[in-house]
Amino acid sequence: MVDGVKKHALPLLIDAVIVIVFCAIGRQTHEESNALAGLLKTAWPFLTGLVIGWSATFALYRDKFDATLLIPTGIVVWLSTVILGMALRVLSDQGTQFSFIMVATLFLGAFLLGWRALVPVVAKTRARS
Image (cartoon, rainbow, N blue to C red; front, side, top):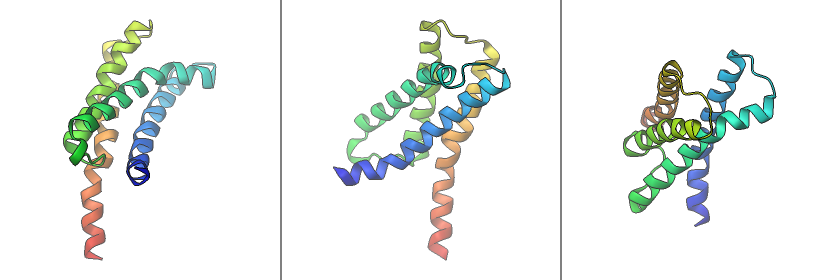
């Protein structure tokens, strides 16, 4: 059990940092105040979507779960982070303008999928060395 937690802790941390960085950049861009409280208010819907995506993928692929896979893990985590994050923002009276949805979808897609797309490339490079 401990090995399983260790194996998945770094990928989950990477995903969470990506979400927090996205929210921090957005808050900085819009010069929003209340740094920590504001960041938490902005980030919690997306972090909740992230955790639900992780949980769903793990439940569906328990025996074959690999947090570093682009498909299915990356896709499910990305879509749940964006879709559930936006739904929770609506429920908590936070903004969901079309441009924000597009930026969130593209940024989170590029980074949540991007690092996973690099994993096999890095592994192949290491194997050749």
